[in-house]
Image (cartoon, rainbow, N blue to C red; front, side, top):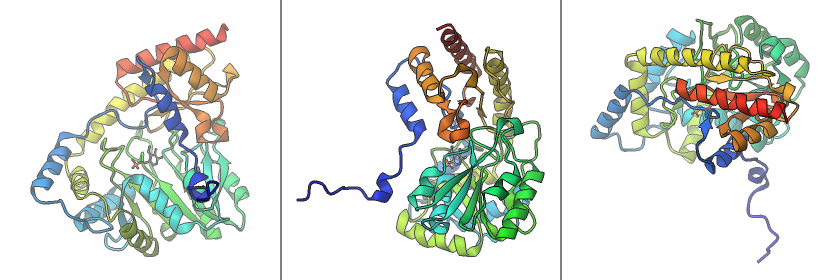
Length: 392
Ligand SMILES: Cc1ncc(COP(=O)(O)O)c(C=O)c1O
């Protein structure tokens, strides 16, 4: 046997472990932790959704589902997209129910990207680098700086485009910065992509967690963009359903057909009972969404005010999501070093900003998907930790 032959393919072994996982593995070894690194709602899935799932099991939803999702779920999604996102989609040919937003992202890149293709990503922004690299794509970061409210300047997109640019990934509202890209920015980007025939992946996972009645604009609703846009949504954040693993994608028929074709070879559909729960979520009373939003709103104030009270820290008010992205550059330590120190010495877990791109260096991502008293304790530990560091 050749003992030097690598077991894993180059493609697979080139992908790195997620930085967030590494931080959490460290955190798990310690007791008395306050974890503000978490990227999921702390709420339980609303009771009526759980009840619908129980009933679905009794009704026999235990067999293979259609590869692109149950038709009644796709119809309910199409109605929601029309009413909420101002997009008219054919539930039969333009919709795909996915294993969370994550599968939507993975498949979009799988179907659109060939080796050598360039993909523009927002920096700091959600980590799409691994999926892009897995398929031989080249991620090209475009800055979204704090001085612009962490919003992209469309001129920077124009400058970053080359003949190899195949896709732009947008994520508004943004994880990790909580920024919402305004209509004018998205319209300016739409003119650029239409002119250049570039596709856009619009990851709108946080579309419902928006404060102060700020407008969420779905990129695919802008004139002339429908055919170029792959829009991705999820039940995970809106309905506190991260564990159910249901999301959906709308795109043109060619892309949706491809997703359906590959789904057969991958996982043969999204778990039937989880799809029934998702249908109940969409068609049931929506006050649960409003109630969770009201709680996030209160927590946002606690975190924002608390962070800005700490000497040397400054933090913009997040417009959306349950993340704050404070600037910690005055401490002259890398965000990894600072996060590790806070974890080990002060039992508080946060996520280093550099995980979200080079422009994320000098920041931390702090989740406020936690009860108020936990946030207050978290801020107090952060303050102690950072004060102690200042006096070292
Ligand atoms: C921006 C963004 N996209 C996609 C996902 C994945 O969501 P899902 O649970 O639907 O796969 C997340 C999860 O944190 C996210 O923050």
